[in-house]
Length: 163
Image (cartoon, rainbow, N blue to C red; front, side, top):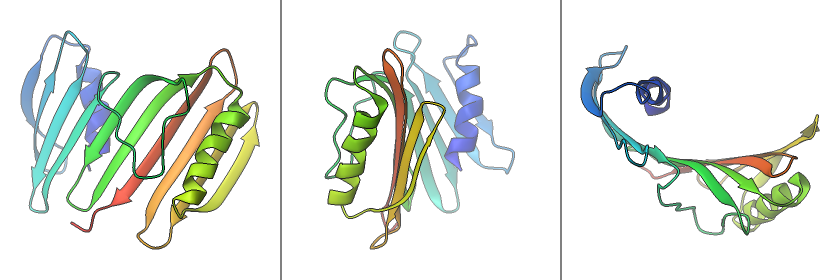
């Protein structure tokens, strides 16, 4: 629920408002803050199922699940952390001074070691992607890397928390 509203919120970050409240299209109460100095955006949405939060920006601390680390030497361009009653997720956009295949291999190996089954591997037009799921708890991950100087990439990991 929070990711859909997050996109609209990030667009408002370009305006002059630094905090506010609003109601989502489906009637949920929400509030947001934008740190004009760092660009960090925070949002909370509350409904009958509980509270969901989003924190996004290049300086948001990176906290990956056990077994995962950032590719060595990566520069975080943006980190979005979502906490919901039954799931926690992170989406990190990064740059790395390494070929896309090395970046993808790093995350594929970490995912396998953390018990994820690789369900998707794809290469197209210089972009590589790998993704999978951990059957034991339904957690998912995906990594995309596009070659260039530097290589740009994105990792998304959603971990079930049992709410």
